[in-house]
Amino acid sequence: MPITIRGEVILPKHDPSKGDYAAPTGQSNLVLRTCDNDGCKNYKGLANCARSDWAHHKAFCAIASRPKRQVKGFDGEPPLRRHLRHWTSRFDNSLRLAAIVALELGTHPDNIDKVGLIVTLRPRPHANSGSRFSFVAAAVHPLDFIEGFLKQSPDGEEMLRLHHDERKALMERTGGEDDFVACLVYSANDGPTPLLARPWRRVRFKPLGVNRGVAQSEQLKGRGYLDWYRDLSYHIEMDIPARTIASN
Image 1 (cartoon, rainbow, N blue to C red):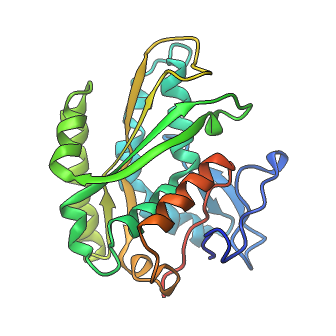
Image 2 (spheres, helix red, strand yellow):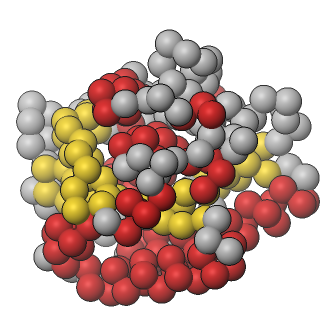
């Protein structure tokens, strides 16, 4: 499957009438699946593809779907929370790509235990709920800082416990080939086009599933700090989420 890096490979074609993502190259028979629990989009078509997708997605789903299940129906979900949930699902691969390069996981895989990614957004007008934010900044931070930040939010302690449990289970199940990067997505409800409802700020914890083979992919070698920052900003501002990356 291709990787989307501006100026080097083909960016995905976006047609709102056909969903958010195109099928992987050479797999036009596949259709887009949306997880009923967390809204994350995955490819499926053939039965074996659906099964393998779920095996990889199950651990993340246990974490990501929990805040959604806490909302009765969805009628009372605050707009900032709802839009941020859709945004993190839509830009999941863009965040993953940025994290792999920013944390230098291809050459220093142990960084996943030391640092994580914080992305800051701001609301903007857009018809698509998954595109309702502009890029403000992104930076690598020590993991203890990220965990301390998360603990200040409701259920933060529980989310961290789930994250650590699922990381351990995933690494045991895959022999250390798959792991989760800690990522926080923060948005203040301010700027020229804020959402007309509280809360005034929202933090969403987004564990990013990373495969060791993907992190060491030839497609990601030689990319530096400015590249990942530039590319993430470009994906968000141009509303063109990255596709998944093939391992070597």
